[in-house]
Length: 73
Image 1 (cartoon, helix red, strand yellow):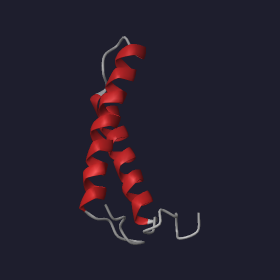
Image 2 (cartoon, rainbow, N blue to C red):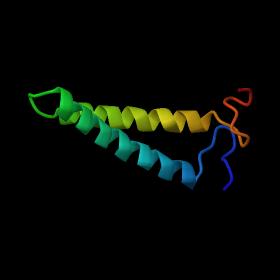
Image 3 (tube, rainbow, N blue to C red):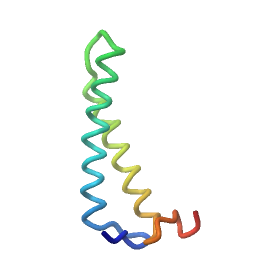
């Protein structure tokens, strides 16, 4: 399994982003159901899922083949 180059994403990154989308959605629904007796705010669930997925993809874009962010850290 090869990491993508700096400023690129590969198909594995896209699959992992999909997993992030699903997991963040599920966890947000569970958290909301446990803490909010008014019901689930599906707009918030979608927002959290989209933001976490975009954040993951941005992190992957800035990570080189050695896993260093911006080639340094």
